[in-house]
Image 1 (cartoon, helix red, strand yellow):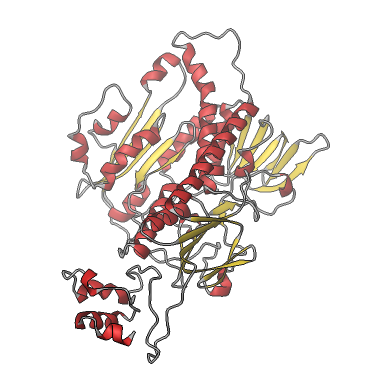
Image 2: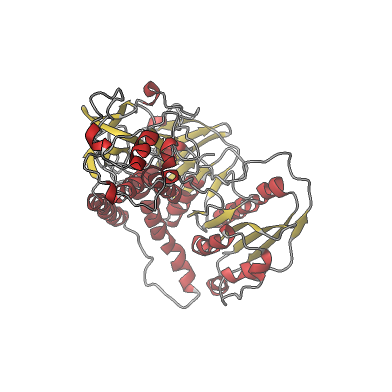
Length: 551
């Protein structure tokens, strides 16, 4: 080795000493790009800019006191094959890293011993929920169609078992695609429960794997409060895979999960009651949007019981359930669903024993690069409780792969993250609420529109659309957009680009609308509904929107 290094270029010798990493004895300096200089390798000294080297290292000279580097089974070992974990693993493998990912066996309802490749979104979240949303909308469309001349010889009937069977088949297809994607990228998929033994070792059902970096992407799970009779309650996992459709269901919670399932079961002709602690649903959303969607839910026949906290569930001899709250008891429910938030899946992962810091709610603390308090351990997605949305987890996973294996430290960008609530009618939003904009900027102009869509003029139904645009009075920059009405999420995806790009109200005004559409209203609102002039709050506030999943 000494001879090998001694015969190399003086520049290479300096480089080796400066970077303090072993050299491959078969590495020829003739292969080194002479256009590079020492400055281009200075990143080796920074923990977030470690240039990626596969395990093609040499042993140090026997006379050298420097210990040889530890060899690992993998460059990255990921615990949890959900959206963020799969994205990080696949991107890392494409960048040349050796990667493994472990996941629990598939089940429609998650537990300490079950999970499945694809994670919450694919198996028991976004995808199956949206399929049920589609199914539930047909009843409203049947009603709309009558005003357009459609007649039905008999009342349309819905078969719940067909819906669930087809939904499960689609889930199986998608999880198969995820597995193929990992395989094609060269990621080794290991079945079982992962537990961290030390900063570089993971135990999967008794077998140990070493890794230079460990990624935790285990997501979260529904949380049910411990009250008398809670064993009779279902959560969102179970609600997506019930053996029969609820006849009468109580949904406890006012967050987006509760509101979405209220719309689903209402559309499928269940008797739906929603119990919330506050005066209206969707805490954390724009106040006018909250009021509007609550009104629309009432018009569609959903009963909302406000300022009520659950105290107990009682099961009768006939199998029906009663919900006792601080205001009384309501009987006769076939199902009681709790949508009172989600908790990170950090239990029994061995995190505390290796020094990974957790938040009070059990979420993993990470820095702006998704690094935990242990330098070799990282975390992305809902387990970190930043913005708990699938596209955000994908962004975090991709950024992590670049940070670790592309020599390109990348921070996830949380500004102007759009989101949707697939309620009925649905909500789309991006940027700040009116309340947040006032705190952040002080002086804002608010534009609103509340109108009957063209379709409703013939259907005769009381459907309406509410739109809101918030602009900074000083810069004219559009700070937030909020829509509640048919196709709101689809409309918002396009306008989110404009808000992210920092376009102004004048840019919106200069855009020609598409007629007749609901979306054209966003580029034709000219007169502010109100002009608010206030002194901004002292200091910066956390103005990034985070939808509350609980009550």
